[in-house]
Image (cartoon, rainbow, N blue to C red):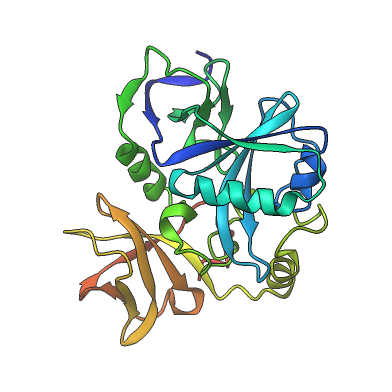
Length: 278
């Protein structure tokens, strides 16, 4: 169990599901669609990616898992049928097969390295742990539900766009895909690439998702974040005294922030470069 802490926790992520993409053209097919490079994806490797609409807003957050002859795509379970339909629409004459796969998605944290076959490091941040596909939880791991994993993710200031981003409203850079290894800016064209690259190149990043700390009951999804009397953003998911919020960067660091009349503090994630969080 190399690299796994004895206190590691495992959870089945029931909110996630799998799609299998196979066939001789699978790499070139996905390469032209996704924000991530899949041409060099190795068997067993996991890469974080997005499928955007033509305007550059998030449709799906995805983990692409290398498999011999194809890949698995880890997507929000309630969006799997939509993803299959959209990929099928894009398929045209490409020699690929697209189908649901009934395997489970697991998370194990904290863990520095995979504990065995079917596990791979989370490509976003090492501290998030590892993800399992066709794997079993190590016998030494404590078992928990997905809520425990969500609490871990939120405490690290890492958004989950399937839970934190209403459909087709958020640019991937606002959800920190550029900082979480979800966009390869060198790979060439993908759907929504022009808008995404322009935002990064011109520094047009006005809002980002950050962690908030609060006391008392969790604020509701969509609760307004105020900087003094000015609107600064809105809360997304929240639990256990921590929340993810989409906030305007120019309104952090000035007037005190509040939600529902209560003070909140920004928890600047370690992965956000200095100077971009304020």
